[in-house]
Length: 385
Image 1 (cartoon, one colour):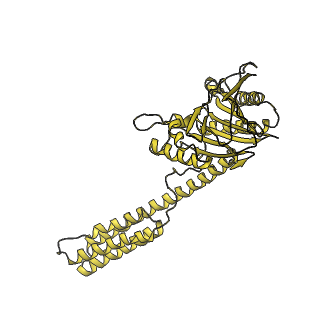
Image 2 (tube, helix red, strand yellow; image 1 turned 90 degrees about the vertical axis):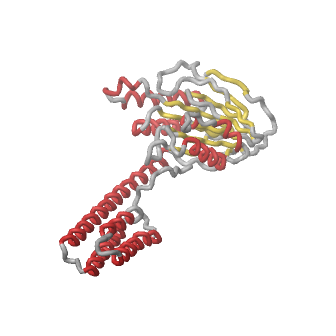
Image 3 (cartoon, one colour; image 1 turned 60 degrees about the vertical axis):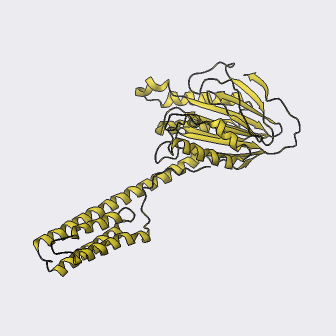
């Protein structure tokens, strides 16, 4: 699974000892210049710059040590001038000591917050691995890879979701997007993932599996919607795409619940957006048995299915231009799943300037060579439930 490196580093500073030469050199220069300068020029107050600079790259101990060195330099300058016990010098030394203590206090608060943030990140990473289990690089005759990009600062999970399960002779894949953000979206994503992993082994047909997910989401909305949230409950839903890829047939079966259709990448730099017949998202209401459609397409050896959430195709640059997903994906059709997602992730973040406006998830699935030699038309058939 891709891990996201967009976080600002607010953690405890690891001191770079080479940088310590900067404040030390400043102290030496200010001390020397003050000593050789005329008697009416006093540069000692500038020594406060040294601990202030140190705080930008070091912790409280080194910052305090530089502050003590600055105080010693101030005392040395005054001793050389014979003014050590004068009122002005005493005030300067006290002021420098107070400012040094304030800077050290700032570094202590920063490190404490950094430690708390590190704990939050650790919990987020653990929750991510619980909810979004890392996809195996190989599952049956398939090669897979995934990437999750969270829009929230200091978060690794959100409302986007994906999962893969194995049946006796096929692989089932889910990718979805919970409307909304925050803990409520994460909770609903956890529900859908758990229901999918369990129901995948209980329903032989993909549409029956989708209906089971619809029932789970409906129960969740009914049982966990607070009275004050009932007005907005009608706007809570989950877009989802469910796929079944048999081991012994070069096809893929897909049912869509309002989710963007996947791209099919051919090694010859051909990219096809599969044309699906989507039903409404999960959670908008109980559908009639004939409302869902099962679309069946060929999925040959060497081809790659690229699944994604709308955070990818709705990503904008500073000019407001959407990310040209299909066009960019066509550049890397020969790549395996992991290199393909590596290229797309880097290109997507470059397009938006390093910060997404919404969570984004991607899954790449490539069928390894099989013994099947027949070729079927792109769209085999469409089935109504």
